[in-house]
Length: 167
Image (cartoon, rainbow, N blue to C red):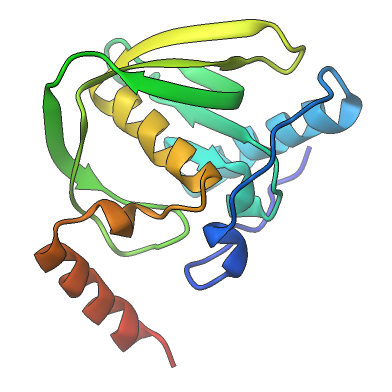
């Protein structure tokens, strides 16, 4: 298939909420999932949301299979709820904001629900990196960048770095 260009910080599509997918099993949707997996792999990421390649439908791909309990796959129209109150703080980065990786607080465990490319229901109980990945990618689908999840001090630091890099 095709490795697609990743949209970078400042592109308005990254702050736009994606729409629900209503037609499943189509050749176009299958190609999109394949392209997104190839794009994520090519960029060395663990997750990618559709708006990061300029598409405004609710599709994410993920690959944490290199970690214990990790998975590789896709979800369409995903949503999540926390499992318990425990949170984790860890380095988080984004393929759309290269060069910035900062401590971000996320829920330690989440239950994610969505559909596969054929419209079959999927539910995944995720923890640690996979839970972080799902929260990050679903934020993208809602037009939210991880910078918004930073503490005020780290957000100022990230903004200073971004302002230095912009012409």
